[in-house]
Image (cartoon, rainbow, N blue to C red):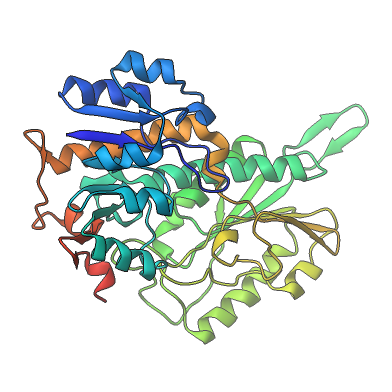
Length: 373
């Protein structure tokens, strides 16, 4: 089997799908690995390291794709690469199938077997393949550093000869993987941290990290999907949520928002009116910027200043830590390949919950239940 790694071409993307360390492991299993020239350069993995690991360096993206049995990428490859893939070949990358029906249709018509790294179910057996969790952890960490860098105050309490400076107050909205990492990082930097999530089950995790859990009485008893994501709330519950959060937001120096709903725009948690009540110099870091934002004033890829509040809308945060993000993503990819490959050949066993959910298209058909609603 020829496993091929193209150079990422999407805007803001610095990661690479496989590192030399993982390539070396695949070569030991008698796979042939092709890597496009400079594919790992932006994440500090040079061609010489890939060659030393046993990979072949290929200049042309189209040549790479034409020869690939399995194409491994981070973002969905550009059009010329997709069109160069042979019928029956396999593509594994982030696909975001719920948001990209045209892409799904293209892959189906081309006879490409496509596996979405974003569709791996959040079950215990799939944890070592869960790229969303790996990347979310990096995003939560980096968001905390952005907040600290943007805020014009200390994070920790500082006792000086000129007097004592109180610690900054941070509020984390959403206590999934990104939110929990943001809590941990803000606490390590010395801030006093509160956190909110619609899922009461995460209260214990929040408190175990030293943060206070903000409680909002909701109508819904079940606020979590089978996959572990937050459900969309009723209008009454959304109104109660906004009222309680408003009081906590206006007291906060830093707000980091991480709330997402699969297949839908990000929920609005911070309104223009809430921003107007925040202290001058306060900072919002909106990790949902690419999906519309949790703050009504967020602009993806920009920092907006409104009422002297800085609203940061970062794009592709994991790519800002490209080296370690690639290390983690490559390990996720290897673990998925270990499940997929049997005796050196891909075996799509749809009795397996992981492969069933992750496989978007195969033999001209849609496979994953995620798109069969």
